[in-house]
Length: 133
Image (cartoon, rainbow, N blue to C red; front, top):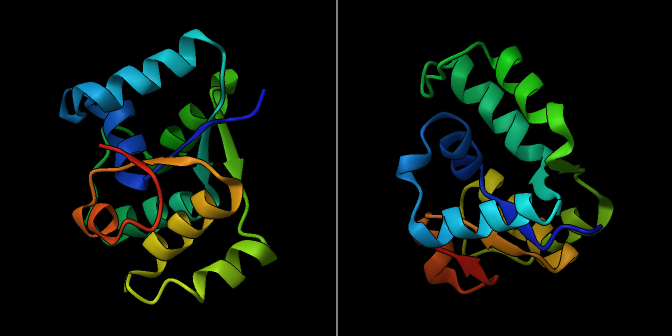
């Protein structure tokens, strides 16, 4: 089964550490996917972003980063999508977003034709990709 949604970095962190911070619609979409055994897509760039933010002290997890990644990998819920040639080419067309991780995540959603679950106002306002807010 193919994923229909891609999770932004902050969404996967919130879902696995404090789901109360998700909107009702975000939670509904994620829980429906799990119920239907549909994988949730996660960009490999999000893993990199989590690693960098935790090492810089800008993101505190309730577990080690290794434990968090083990949790992501366990259970077969997530499908990690790589940074591909097509995604990199798409990144070049997203000049309205400055953050490189945001650009890679949005580009991944566009290339893979996935809705992006996000609360990032810049991404939402950009209208570059369909979003679940």
